[in-house]
Length: 530
Image (tube, rainbow, N blue to C red; front, side, top):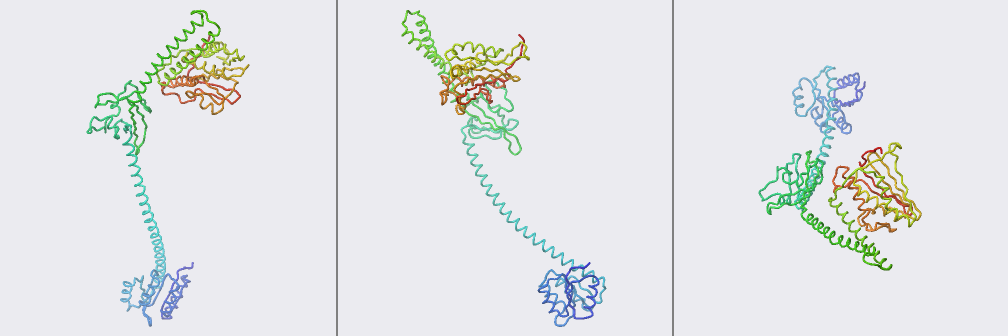
């Protein structure tokens, strides 16, 4: 195997040169350049890097130490070996110390020894070159690391400034909230509060809320059981010790995780003004009931007496006029009653009186009472009820407020009658799915556009592009309130926490009729034989 290391030999003795040349050839060293003159050797190595330089010590014009010293300046990493006689041993040692020569070899040498030193010298040069290369790469990497570190420090510093600004803004917002904000841990112990919370709960500036149990600071007016995932607390209050009075509050709760720990944020709002508005609204409703319903009922009764002839005979013109007045008074009374019902549902003050009854029988009763309205346009009702118990005699009972469901069915049927075309059919379909009951009322009248459907169940909706609307703008809205209240209770909520599902809805297209549907969830009680 040929060894690729490049060797330069300088010696003025032909015998030494021939001996080394032969020995190196035998050992497989093929890349060897030999010189008798040190100056020629220096010119050669200026343009030719080498792995090992072997030089005799005593040479004319320039000794070995001088030659190797100049060669080292040209190639500092090249390994050097000095050949010397026994008498020059002392100078050789000095050269090793001063120049860093790898080895000196005394003449005459042993072949095995010199070959071993030559191989070690070449390996040394290569290791130094590899080490130098790695050092250069390491320096480049260190430089890049320093640049990256500097850039990272600048980014961290910039980000820290941004975070500080954001924290200042956030703290400013929190501290200046009009609502009290409290952060408490899983044990309900207060960790942090804002200025408004201090004003709301502290009797003096020395009071400290930190560590106190949050739920011991608020008064549960109705002894409600607070669920673990509760988000809004109503009917709570706190004590204003400065004026010795209760302050009604509404509390919104939100779970958060900070640095791996779970906390709850409580946003506490003083609803004194809202409660006062509710009181004023209650007073208004009471006034509306007394000052409008009572005289309207009296007017209707008086008009009835007149129309029945109990106040004397009246001619046809007067009778027609009184009938119009009575109809207007009844419409006005209907509007007042609708407003009252809407108020009761929105305020949560209406309590559903649920009983077990047949939905199908209730529908038949409603259609029977509305039948006189069909004659003018020659309309017909068409029923589709499910077969109970595979066709056996029986009926399905539901658990709901019968009077309120009657109101919904009557509203939807009246709406269908009003907007059906002459000689048309109004279909009433009832279906059951597990515990849910569904009613669909289909007419083939004016129909609805997509835009109309989206606003149909809104309060005071005044109709559509084709003037399809309830007379007061409250009939469909009230129907929605009734159905949502039923389904909210079916899901374990109160009247104020309405169901988020679409429980009552409409579908249709212009000039292709319309379908009004509602679903009573978890309403089916049982199917019983009759």
